[in-house]
Image (cartoon, rainbow, N blue to C red; front, side, top):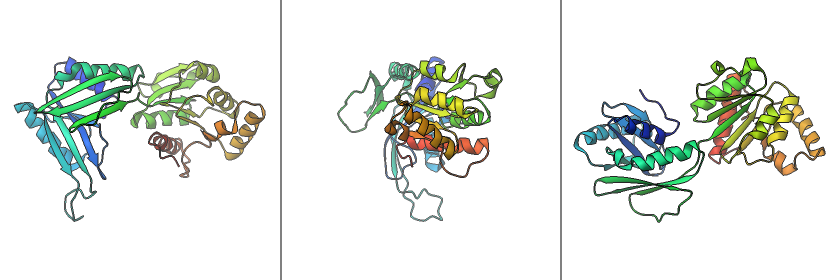
Length: 318
């Protein structure tokens, strides 16, 4: 079993509450072409079950081995992993990076901090998680808001943001495919659909928040923050236009609309002429939505959209 938890802090809190024995593996520091960034976490259970990942491969296997040993002996430790193999024919990572992992077999010491982080993420509040290692012991502390913590050896400061939330406007074939793809990429889902037959729970991932009603009205009533992504993929240009009018210029990290270049051009002209958007606001809209990969089927279109949203999220959008 190896599932990527949507919020690792909630999972840690749940496992601690259930009295389970496990170790938390945290990427304390990474350099070069390391597979995961600082702050990435995974859980290793006493039987070797891995929940999440800190990079995979042989070196992750080493981390699992050390975690199992520490669950027996106690005491946190650091493991340095180097990706510096010199021969591609050898069974060694050759990407050239380095990771320092903190393996903590006693996460119960930091129950309050993990619980506070989980609560803040569910409430879509920011905060700062500080992880320190010294003398064979790991300590984690939580502070609401963005706290400025001085850099120190073996100390990780994480400024945590709420998980990305994707609002899908339209529950048709593309909307359903997009929900499946985005769910796998770690997005929380809100589905808006005005047709009852396309607003059924069984059409979407179990965790999706499905809201049946008028597109524009529901969007205007929906809180939108800097971690909110909006994909407008409804059944036609009139509903798309109404939805775009309800969200353009708001704080969303991403707004995209499906449609041909002609449709997009006509809608742009109409909205600018009516004063419903400025040129700068329009330029922030991804329309036609998705990366240009020649997508045709709903699932291919979904992949192109999710790829573009990931690029925006990682600040590398083309």
